[in-house]
Structures are given as C-alpha cells and as structure tokens.
Image 1: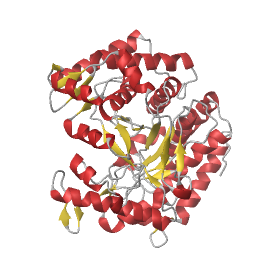
Image 2: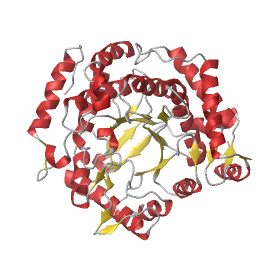
Image 3: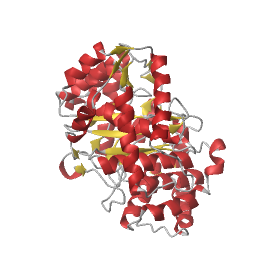
Image 4: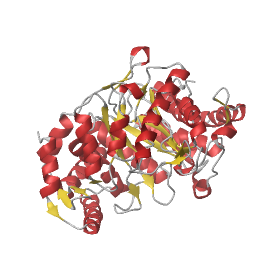
Length: 459
C-alpha cells in the first residue's frame, strides 16, 4: 500500500498545473465520464433502486479520480494514483469506530442500502455562528438528545472575551481550546459525560489551533474526532496535510469533510455525484480518514434537500455502501430555518433518504447554514426520528422513493424563498435548554401529515 509520505512526495513533485486549468479539466472529465458510463438523473427516481447503476457510478468515480488526481493548492501540483493504490487505501480502512467512553460509548459500523441496523447519528450545528454567551447552551441542545450517538457544536461568532477571533491569530488558538472545553462541559451537563464528539473544534481553521486544542486536559476524549475539510473540488493544501501528520500519531479519530457544489465545476447532479465519491479516495490517501462527513449542496439554493440533491445523496451513498466498507455520514443541509413546517419536511425527507441508501446520519444545518443562532438540536431530533423509523419499518428504497416524493410536494416549490425560521432563543427555553411547546407541537403535526403517506414512526 502507498505510504503517506509518498503522497506528500507526489504533492511536491507531481505535474505542475495552474489551478484554473485543473478546475476546467475536472469539469471536462466529469462530463466525459458521465457520458461514458451513461449516468443520468431521473427526477422520478429520487431514491433509485438500481444496484447495477450504483456500482457503475462507483466505477465512474474511480475512473475520474485516477484520470484527474487531486490538487495541492500550495504547491500547484497534481497528485495521481493507480487504481491498485486507490483500492488498497479503501481496503485498509477501518470497519468500525468506537466513540466515547463508559456507559456513553457507541460503536459505528458501515451500513448497506436497505440495512435493518439502526442509523448511527451525529448531531451537529454545522458551523452555525453563536455568540459566546449562548455557545454552551447550543452545545447542550445537541449533546442531550438521546438519539445523538455523538455530537458537535456551533462556531463562535466573531469574538471571545471581547477580542476578535481571526484565522491564523493567537486568539484562534485560545478560542479553539475554549471551544473544546465548552463541548465537553455540555456533555457533562446533559448527563452524558462520556459521549463522543465527532469534531472537537469548529472555531478554529488552521492546523496549529486544532492541534493545540486536542488535549485531554481541555476536554478531548481518546477517540474524539477531528475533521479535515477538502477544498472544493478535489483539492488539499499543506495546512490540511499537517493535521493528517498529527492525527497519524494520536488516538484521535481522523475525519474527512467533503462539500462539492452542484452547479459548479462538475456540473449537474451526475457529475457532482462522481466528485463526492472521489473525495473519499482523496480522504483516504491524503488524510488517512477513518470516517467522512458528506455535505454536497446546490450552489444556488445552498441545501441538499432539493429533488436533484436527494438523488445525489442517495446515489453517492449507495455507491459507497455497496462497494466499500467506509464509514460515511450524510450531512443534512436544509433551506428553511428552525421551528418552521418546511424545515420539518426537509429534515424528514433527508433522514429517510440517507437511512435507506446505506448512510449514517449527521443532522443538521438549517436556514442555508448562514444565519447566526438558527440551528438547534431539535432539527437533529426530527431528522434522526425519521431515519430510525425508516429502518425499524424495513422500508425499501422503492417505498422510500414514493414517500419522499410525496413529502417533496409539500416544500420543494418553496425552496427559493424558504423562511429563515426562529433563533435558538426564540424556539427554546434557555433556562432548561428544551425546545418550546410550539416547536414540539409543530413537529408532531408534521409527523401526522407524513404518516398519511404510509410512513410509520417508531417514536
């Protein structure tokens, strides 16, 4: 198997290429390979059941990665790999992760399409900005949820102790250390002191800040995770690879974060699907990933709950689940904000889609992931309840396709003008850190509507 330092060597000696040329080449190759493998999006098959097509998509993504490689934005060089090297990196991936410790310990396994095993759920606020005074309570809102097998928190909004937090500044290190302490304190206050954290820090960007914060005395448990985000599309840089060097020598879990943009260089849902799968090959080779978090988004709508995006989510995770034993989360990005009917339907549609497609689940980014305080633990609950219920009732992909299409009719026309919803302080009791009666009752009403499709809730 190719060694990590050989990958580093190729990042310094590979073909020299301008970044824009690589971007254009990626788009050309994606289009060419989509045509070569006859991959076509079908709006009536939001959740396809064609196993042969899933396998063909995986092979197409493999061809794309082998032909185009990945790009180091710092060195300006293309790293290329043989099919044997890519497949060996997949074969040697871990087949489970133990998160947390003590009675809060949970084990994550790979899943298959239509798998009857429960979906492993990470509840996260996906980088939503929160002010310092609400940060801990926002973390508690995710850590306290019983269906959250592991959890994460928000990002810090602008300042800590009145001092601006800027990327690369000394304050970024201080904020990262403060961040992980807040997350662990949230787990303690929620009554789950040993619950795993799937990414220890969201407040920091640079490697030095993340590495500085990853200490047990600050709150990190031995198998808490650290995410390494690829640059869209199929790019890395030296700072990201520094994190990989650190993680190779520690007990912390190495995660990859992949967010290809549909409507960008790769074009429509077909090409973007290949790019998302190819990012998993990048992650194994450049980062040594043990798990991945996938958040493909529509470049115009900034969500992954449109009809096209649900197809992309289903197809990519089916392809990965059928052809690898990788551990992959489907990260939910919705257009509507908290405490809205539309958000409930988006979350339900994505949860069902991920569950029957062989993914594990990471809900949720709300309100297009751009409004401060508009993301809470309640969105994770709504999405996870749908995902768990889908597996409990033994839902097939064909049945799920029919149900999700009916749910889509309730919200898809409103995506361009989705409501931003309510802030955390407006839809939670901040003293008890519990969702408001209004939000709970709204969720129950939308569940009753979803039940009319034949969907059976286990909760």
